[in-house]
Length: 125
Image (cartoon, rainbow, N blue to C red; front, side):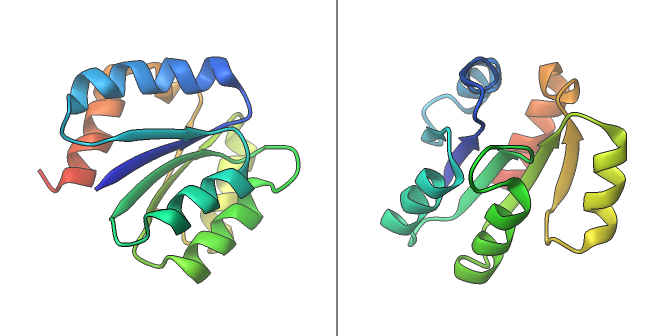
């Protein structure tokens, strides 16, 4: 199992990966990418593993919607949580059938309990 955090904001990557590394310990390797294309390559290189992806939805280049379509098409066993800035966008993603397992706000990602719940769900606890 591997965890991948995808966000064009390096501060957001650090703010999510730090608490997750404490929660996960050495149990799950945590990978990061700032672009959807780079994230897909990381998954491609290790596709035998089970991936849990936390991704920003609003990114330059390949946006979250296209990134999710690519993951679902190429790596259907990957679990994805999308992180968004607005409740309006959350409603759009929820109703769009993107295949996203969860949609959280950026504010939720600052909550250690939310991150712990995500990690436990990923590990099947």
